[in-house]
Structure formats: structure tokens, C-alpha cells
Image (cartoon, rainbow, N blue to C red; front, side, top):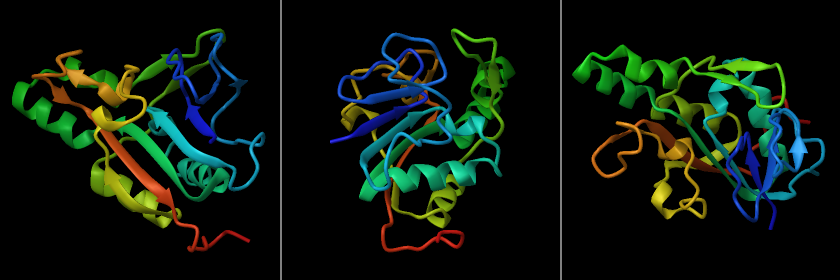
Length: 191
């Protein structure tokens, strides 16, 4: 079973192939996650990517999803987490503390081991992300509960709460969504 952890950063999850631009000892492929030439078509069972999709703008994200779909096996799973615009908006409206939501909305991430810095370029709510996935060849789009995943014991941004680390009483600010590759659907630009 091949499981990819795309944009893993410092988070190591046993049993996954780790791909990131960062320089950490557990990185299997030090490269951008937009293309995955080291994997054949339909060769991957699961792609997990936490808080990376927002670094691609609305035009860039389409070929990224097409590439991720390409490597997934028929009915393989894509599990992604992104900052949840709806949750962050409600939190801001209730508390009126801009500093609390600035990082998740306008994140800046220096890539360890390089001089490169990346920034959040967009945000999503559930309806928007679901539509994006469906028009790009995914089906059965739904929210997932991070407590019930194989990566539940490895803290990452899919478990992001405000107040920070208050997983019992805080507000989850991560939109956690999974979908399956729709192997029966032909994409418009697919040959």
C-alpha cells in the first residue's frame, strides 16, 4: 500500500512516503508537491496533505489536483486539510480578534533548509472545496474526523484549534475533507 504525505514539513508519519521542499531527515523526496513524476499512474492508495492546498492559487490548484488524481489508484483516497474560512469567520465575528485568524488566513512559511518562503494564496469553505474536488475528478467528497484517521496520533494542522491546542474546548479551524478518485469520470482536458 502506497500512502503519500504531501507537504509534510516536520511531521513524520510511519508508513507514508514523505514529500516536501523542506530539509528534514524523514523526507523521502525533497521537491515541490505540485508534480509527482516519481509515481506511475494509478499507483497510490492514499494522498494526505495538511494545510498545503491553500499555497496554490485558484488557477494553480487545478493542475495540482489533476496530478494528484493521476497517481491515485482507481477509487484511491485524497485526504486534505485547509484553513476553514467559515470557522475562522465565525470566530472573528464572535471575538473580534484579527490576530487570531491572520496566520491561518494569510500564512507565511519559510521552507526549512532553503531561502524560499511560501504564502497562502486562497482560502476555502466546505461548499467551495467540495465543488473544486468534484469538478476535478473526485467523488464521495465529505468531511473527515481527524480522531478517526490513521494519522490521528501525529499532531499537524488538521488538528488546529483556537485557542491553540485546546482540542477539548477550542474551535477547530481546519476544514478536513476526503474524497475518492472518480475513475469512471473523464476530465475535459484528459486524453
